[in-house]
Image 1 (cartoon, rainbow, N blue to C red):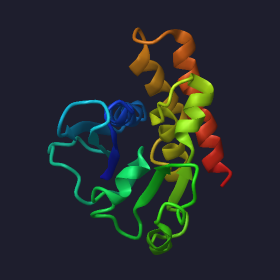
Image 2 (cartoon, rainbow, N blue to C red; image 1 turned 90 degrees about the vertical axis):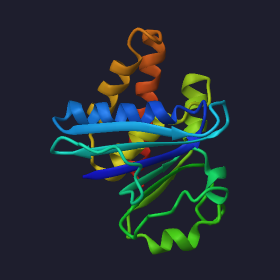
Image 3 (cartoon, rainbow, N blue to C red; image 1 turned 90 degrees about the horizontal axis):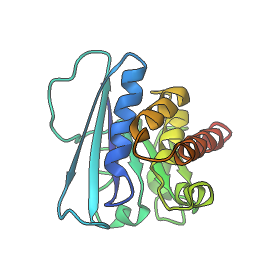
Length: 190
């Protein structure tokens, strides 16, 4: 089983990101499960969302204490909450920032991780450029696919199209696909 924990703030699409990752896994013939946990339900409040991916049906719904991957949509949470709790040297770490790990105070932590397990991505900036809004979730999903190989970019883009069909205009949906594709390319070339 592959366990992913998303950390962000309300309004960043943290819950939607976990749901789309679960749908991407399903599209690949795997089983996926996504569910959130959050305190005060308001924009800007810390939100944690979970996604499990497995070959077999998933029958439990406990929060993920030992993640195989951490996706941090808001790096300000790194020093406020126990975001890195439960991680091991083989955990993947993807952080939404244009700054280096040293600049955000994680240089020692990243050195502890196995090579190729950590990446930063300016997902918010990418989203602003393409979508005109600071919604980093689809960029981070594209980057997640490249970093981990757990799901394909094709499965991610299919999940984006399915999740937003009838909710967003076709132009905005395709802009989200573009953001995910750009992010995937950035991580593939790191």
